Structure formats: structure tokens, C-alpha cells
Image (cartoon, rainbow, N blue to C red; front, side, top):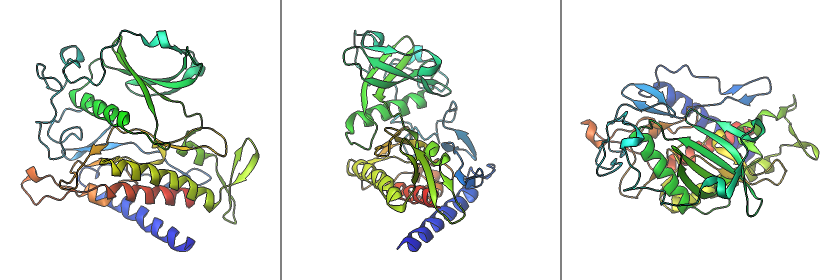
Length: 339
């Protein structure tokens, strides 16, 4: 069984890499080695979406409405309205794109700093992005620590706003111990602040960086209890958390579409840490009758059917994909942990 599982994961991974090389929009990417570093550590990947024969980073400002992943998967614009009274032209600053009409953030009079003490020092920074910074925030009432993600809304693109709204709407509806919990949202001072549970164990990608592989194939990592072997039972426990989270999402018609090591967090640094699925920016609410057509995801992890997707509006025969694309990504994750 173990050999069969490893063989299947190897086939999945190499097929995924070959699919990325031949897919539209991926031709200009220089593919990184699947395994990097002296100890066989996996390389980091970036979430990308296709845009008219080229690939842009998820963090980039999107200029092409017709193929941006934030639009309806069929390529139409009718579902992308930000506000009935505002312009949806790319590049329009948020000042003229009101969040009020279709806002995901209800008007509130309590300020973020009234409820949370934000650590603005270097030690309080958990991570930074192009438009966001994640800091530690402590609830003034309970003393519980949270992760507070501040997203700058200055000059935000309409498509990015749509994606952000969708992510928050989905996170608000999900309640599972293997999915990051969204507690509160504040919109003030030109930024959106998302208060989520704090995961102190870091990304699963960082965890694998600490794994040492010995010539006999055994793997070890260091915890508070010293050196611990990374057994297949431990890997099975990790993958079980991913599968349960995705099964929960699929049962609620939510497809994640960007599963990878970087989007899996560990709740603590202890041996009994829970796995937490994060980053629903590429997620899609689907139904059993309609397929999905947006070409997006991360190299190495994305399923071949995603790369071959063609929307009905392209003039050629359409070919979409379903939530099973997430299962392909889980297979790749399994391989990258085991091998």
C-alpha cells in the first residue's frame, strides 16, 4: 500500500509539472525543480492566473477584465458589479468604488484599536505582502491573541475587491476545526482589517524546511520534545486534516482552487498541532450543473483539467473542471511530504 501510494503521488506530481509546461500562459515560466535545498525541501510557489497568453502574479493589479479569475468563470462581466452606482473600470480608486451597497462589512462604530491592542513592533509582524501586513492583536477584553491582517484599500482594483469580498463571505460561512476562523472585520482608515485565529506553528512549507532526510530514508524534525521521526502515520494525520477540510468545503459547494503547502498552517509548534486551511482568494462557489473555467492556481499543484479549461464564450468547444481539481492538489501535497 505504501509503495502504491508513493507511486501514485509521483505520477500525479510529474503529470502536474508537465501540464504546467504545456498549458496556455505557462510557456514563459521557467519551472523550478520540484525539490530544492540541501535536504530535499520543497520550493515555494506563487499563485497565478492566466491573462491572454501570459501569467501574472496573484498580487498584481489586474487590467484584463475578460480573463481575470475574479470574474465569472465563463468570462462574462455581469457578475462583477462592485456597486450599482460606481464605475467598474480597472484602475478606479476605491474612493469612487463604494463598498456600501454590496458591502461585506456592516457599518460599525467600534474601532479596531478599541477592541484589540495591535503590536506594531517588529516582533508583532507575522507576515507582509504587496498590499497587506499581518500583525498580532490582543483582545482587550479576554487577552486572547489573534492575527490581524490589514489590507490597504488605496487604489485597489475592482477585480481584487470582488475576490476579497468573496473570500470573506466564504470564510464567514465556514466553521471547521481545520479551516482558519474569521472572527471580525473592520473597515477604517483606508484599510480592511481581518481578525482571524492565530496560528503560531507557521506554514506547512516552513515545517518541511526543518525536516532532515537521512541516507536510509528516515526523516526527522525537531520539536519541544527533541528530535521526532516524521513517520507515515504522522503524514497521514496531516493529510487527513486537509481532506476533512476540503470535504467540508465541497459539501458546501466551495472549491478552494489553490491548495499548496504555503496555504496550510499549523495551529501551534507542538506535536499535537492542528492543520488550518487558509487563503480562499481563488475559491469558487460551484454547483453540480455548471463547470469552472478560470485558469488559476500554483505551479506543481494545479490539476491538468484546470490548465486545459476553455470557457463557453471562447468560440471553441468548452471544457471546464469541477471540485475534483482540489483532490489532485492534495495528491501533490502528499507526495511532497512523503518523498
